[in-house]
Image (cartoon, rainbow, N blue to C red; front, side, top):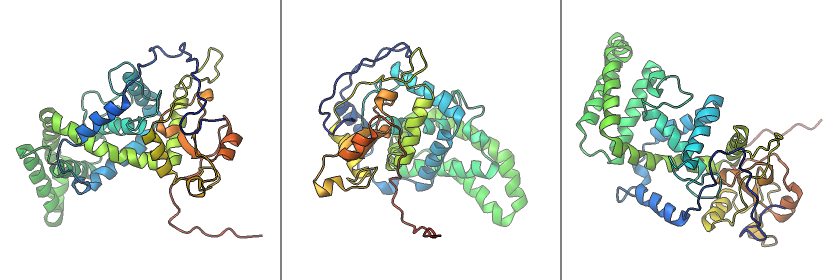
Length: 346
């Protein structure tokens, strides 16, 4: 049977290390680590949702979905970025090992954000820098979104470079109505080269503000990932597929993370995402007060699953017992706002 909320009856597992070339990470004070991240997110006092530029949020979310669907990205970039955390080159060092609020969903958003900006280390699977892969008009739109998002964040102050880039973009945009031939000439030629040079300079001269911007936007993307239980299941499955499965010398999956007592924040996130209902049968566990909610590993840790939030869901006691360590189909957590056609009865 899977774990009940609160971790009743949880025993420490024997961690199989022959497939991992790093030692088990040291335990981290996640309350303190969470406070540090929240402090970073509040670098600008009075920051509100209205100061996020939604077109840029949408682009970043689209980039995340694109990367997750790319086997080269998941098999190379995602694999090595997780290893970087375990080796202490990134935080948290116990990613996947323990349940935490700033977990894999946030790290995926950050790693995808980095692909927008990093023209030196594009990643193991990237053949070309992101902006150079864009079609001419999309390149212009992407830079406009970056400039708008930077301005709204207020992290950049009175940056003359942003003013210059914005002026160039406005000039190009105005040509579409007055001189379409010149518009395409600039989009495909001279203006593109100038804007690329400016963007490279922006990356070089404003690393601090860009880092703050990453900390502003990436939690928004992490929220969208965690809201979608099927997307979380896809990510948890991907983590197993790329090799984080405790594989034994006989090629079998095995337990490689210890059972954990669930932090209060993790419980609240799952109760909110699943609306207090069993993810399998839909019973309102919280409202009916007839059953204890259980936190279930969608992919059992005995079968190589991890402890990250993307691998967790809420189940009632009967469904939890019935599921045991089996892999089952995961239902969507997104409400059906649009009515579906009724199935015809033959």
